Length: 113
Length: 248
Ligand SMILES: [Zn+2]
Ligand SMILES: [Zn+2]
Ligand SMILES: [Zn+2]
Image (cartoon, rainbow over all chains, first blue to last red; front, top):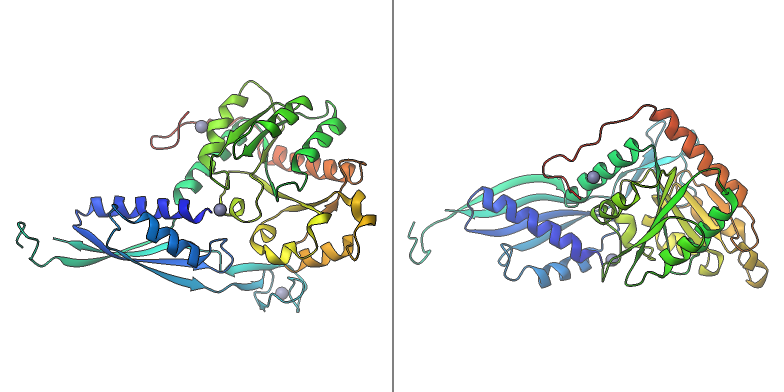
């Protein structure tokens, strides 16, 4: 389950930021997880619960925003639905994933004395 | 504020980061790409379920290419050296990367293994990932192409169940096609249809490492990719280990 290694990377990034700003604690994290990112939000949340103890994130709530997949034609830009073949119904060119593969740390809320 | 009991007011500060959580892995992957470029190597991330035939495919490839180009490999394995031993027996310089309980390879693991290959002048470096259709797709290793081995015995629904793996594939090798006559209701066309629903530019080659089907087409694909790289990277590149980048 790679969600553990993602939580590890997340917490060490947050720790770095908290140190740099002399934070007394971290209260909330906002992350974005795409539907086609390969990361399961539920698994990420439970991995986070396990890992955050005794870290800078011990008291920090994890807010996960899910991003739906969105495809568009690589040629004309028209929206393509993932139903049949991933081709533009208009010009026949392959679709491209515009949104939905993100594994992103958006924002940290920290307590600074 | 009161430092004694912490009763004083702290200020809540919002820090906008907007950064990929795996940014560290991506930096390591970019560094691997420098290695590959400096040595004119085509790197492939070979993924697929356990038992999908990744190792057999590399063995058959080595037998087929003879001395035409030089193939080297690393093999991600939870605990054993088995796959790497099979590859070496087939004449492929290979070593295993034991991942312990990690279900995927990451760029730092590959970087660590890379320097073992400095002695071998390679054309193609195959990174045989841990057998798994989920996790390996998430980690960039610095490869130039993703190749996914999917065996006919796994069923036509695999691409739709694991879209992330397949949408990132540059090539799907449909393996063990010699077994098709024994499988009811399973066809090459069925796999091709499933792939077209998750791969924007589906590319599939039906192969049998055992019988030899499709191997020439697969090697043709490798040659095309090699030619592309040669065109892009003529002349040597300097390769440096920047401070903070993974070293070895
Ligand atoms: Zn995993
Ligand atoms: Zn179009
Ligand atoms: Zn290096």
